[in-house]
Every structure is written in C-alpha cells, then in structure tokens.
Amino acid sequence: MDNGESSYERVSTLRFWPLEPEQDRLERGDNSEGAVSLLEEVKLCENWITSIAWSPWTLHNDGQCRCSLACSTGDGSVFLINISQKLQLRGGDGFLTTYELDSAFERVTDVVCSPDKSAVTALKWIAVSDRSPILVYSKPGVVYLWSRALPPTQWHGNRALSIQPQKLSIGSSAFSHVSGFSYVAERDVLLVALLDGSLHAIHNISLEPSWAPTSSKDHLTSEALSQASRVFFARTSPTDIAYADVNRISGLVCYDSHSTLTWIYESLSPSDFSYKHEARHECILLTAPFWPLDSDTVLRAAQETLVQFDCATRSTPLHWLRPLLLHLSGTGHFTEVCPRLLEVLDQVPQEELLVVFVPPSSQATGAELQHRLRTSLATHLLFGWNGLLSLRMRLAIADTCWRLCKDEQLRLRCGQVAHRQLTSISHRVLRILVRHFTAIVAALTPSDVPFVLRVVVQSRLAGSPADLSGEAEALSTKVNAAIAIDPSIAGLHELCPACHTEVPLEDITRAVCPSGHYWGE
Image (tube, rainbow, N blue to C red; front, top):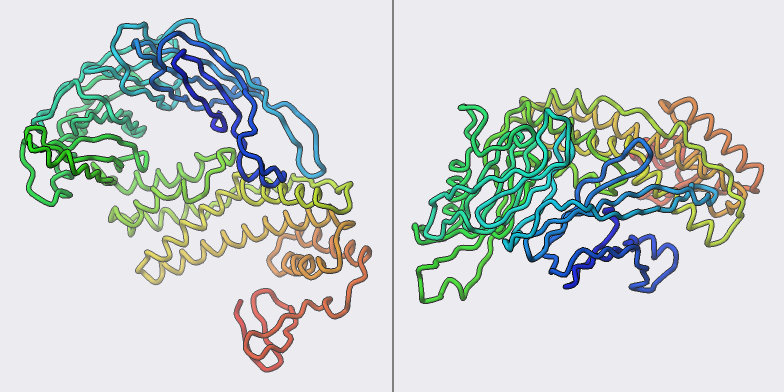
C-alpha cells in the first residue's frame, strides 16, 4: 500500500488513510485539503510504537496484492499486520475502466519478538529473490533476522547475530545503535551501519546468515568495510584525524543496489570537553563505491534495470536509470561495456498498444470529456505501459552512450540505436493519439483540425507501420466527413523562421520555403 499513510499514538493504535495523488485531486477540481477518510484502525497494545516498516507488495494467483507492516513497541515487542488489496471493477468512463481498492487488515496473533524491555533501534524489510521477504531488526549489540515458515530447505523463524566491535575510534562500541541497512542481492550480503561509524556484513543471508564470508576469496568483511568507511572520513575531513575522532553515521542507504552507498556522518570528539565540536554540528552527505564493479556486473545491472520495473510504481525513468548512468560514466569500463550494451538496447520490446481499444465517447463536449481524455492520454503515454517506458529508458541510455563515446564508429552505432528507439516511441505515441482522436471525432472543432491532420501526416510517413497508416487514413476520412475544413489550413502551412513565408508541410523531416531556406527538422 505505497499510496497509504499511517500514524501512531501512545495507545499503540495504527490508523490508515488512503493517500490520493495531488494531481488526481486537482484534475477533479477539488481544491480542499485534508479531506480524507479513515480506512482502518488497528489496536496493538498499551506501549509506544517506536518504528514501523512496510514489506514489499507481492501479487498472488487470486488477484490480491499482499504485504505486511512490522511494528516495534517500547517494550521490545515486534508485531505484524497483514494487509491485502484487490481491485474491484467500478465501471468505465468512455476511455478507461475504473476500479476501487478493496482492502483488508489482519493483526497476526503470533508476535515476531516478545517483550524483553530492550528497545528496537532499527526495523526494515529486505526483498530476497526466491523466498519471502526477511524482516531485519536490531537491539543494542544484536541484529535479528526473521522469516516466515518456508520449505525445510530454507531457514525460518528468528536468527540472532551478536555484533562484533570494530576498534576504529575512541567511540567504537558493539552496542551503538544501528543507523542503516543495505542489502546487496548479487552477493547475498546485508550491510549494517552503526552509529559509531563502523560497517558490518552479514553473509549468505538467504540460506544461512553469518558474519563469516562463504569464501576465503570474499574480501567483503566487516573489518574491510569499516576501514573503508574510516578512509572516506579521512579524505573528506579538512584536518588530520586521530583515534579520538569519531565519524558518527546517522543514516545509510544503497545508491545503486550494488557497491555504491550513500550515508550521512558527523565528526565528533567525545574526549574533547571544550564542547567545540558539539557546538558546531556539521553533517556531511557522502556517496561512494566500497568495491569496484566489473563490466559483467554493470551489463547485468543494465539488463535488470530494463526489465525489473513496473509502471504501477509511477516512478520516472531517471529514478531507475540514475545508478546505471553513474556506472557508465565513472567505472572505467565504458569502452568494454558499450558494444555489448548496445545489443541489449537494440532489442525493442513488444508493443502492447496493438490490443488497446479506445471506445467512442458518448459525451460530445464539455469539461468532463477533457478530463477523461487527459487522464486516458496520461495513462497510455506516461505510466500505462511497461513497453513504452522501457523504450524511453533505452533511448536515454543510448543517448548517454553517444555522449560518452570517443570512437566515431561506435558513436555512429549509438546514434543508430537511439534513432530506432526514437522511431518506435514516435509510432507508439502516434497510435495512441490516432485512436483517441478517432474516438472523439464528434467532439472535434475546426480549431482542432490542424493538429489532428499533422498527426495524420506523421502517421503516414515512409517507414510507419502499415496498420498505423491505415488507422490514420481512416481518421482523416472521418474528420473530413464530420467537419467542414477551411482550405487555408488544409495544407498545414507553417511560417519560415527566416523570412516568414508560408511553408507547406510535405515532409515531417525537412522543409523548404519558397525563398529556398532549408530546415532539417
């Protein structure tokens, strides 16, 4: 329920409200604030709720999406609330089928952790492939892992791992609070950051969690990570650091799902009783790789980026591409990765829009039709189809490769791949527009005709799919039959930017005015 909110009170009552996107509210014309209704209220116990964590949503065969909300309380207990959601058909508005969310909440009777008067300092779910999510929580000196009952070949229940101190500074302690978790799927390692500035690695977390690496060749140890953290602290410090200086890490996340971490640290001197350091309070945000990635890992990351996303998250392409673009420009493997990456990018995903049917609108004009048309176009053009979003991401990667490439022949190949992606995007966008215009022909006005005819011309250019050209021709016929077109706009004339004479739109890729000015776009 990533579109939901929760709040907690001293009586340990969780309340859930549906969170409506602001854009949906504005499009509906509702300018009110705070107009939300209580979705559910779940009472746990009479202790403070200190932290909550959402598990990833999973889709089941019965059409339900399910997740769990973990809650820790002040007495050290950890509870679970199971949440399920299912789409219920509400109707159609002429363009899109609309649904309602049917939600159910259930408090799990068995607790993850019984009260022991030891406070939970961190709580997080991690998604592990080929098994249910693992709940990670910490108490002073111990990291706990919990998983639901699974087949006998996989561990389940609670696992407790005592933290081993890393003597980096005067403030090093195994009882420091955990300030961040980061799971690295390719290595099956959970990175744990402590407030004292140390980093720790739990290996083989999906099969048999342990502080010890599974191989003697694995150098991703708690000692190595902690020393690397200390080195970054020394590099960013304006003065030389000593054993009395503590790099307190107050938050850590993974930037790229691999080796690059982002964390916040503050330099402290607990033994300096002048309180000069404590009075300054300067926090530093750092992003840095802790180990190098080879070209195969970068290529695999690119392949995963192009397939492991979903339009339902409403995330922008840049959100998914930012880590990959960082690796392409900064790992030193671009020359080796680029040719192989272009082969991946050149695989055009299947077009889902071929099966999209836009029914004719029963409402001729009005603001309601505009709202429905705007919503439908936003759904199909921006967030509705994984294939179209994948093409936009492929185009962005190909364009980045073109900018980074120094070899002219390889750069030409990058441009060719980008051009094919751009052409595919153009054809899909044109198909969406043609089908929507066909559905609202009765509502078109003479002022709409120039834009509609431009879409028709672009859809009938050389290289366009035959079915798209056929749909555009049918749209042109319907427009001519429904609207008396002014001859002055029938030719789709434009003004030359140089001499301001009329230029007939005969080819979308180039134009020549009567004065001989040539325009390549």
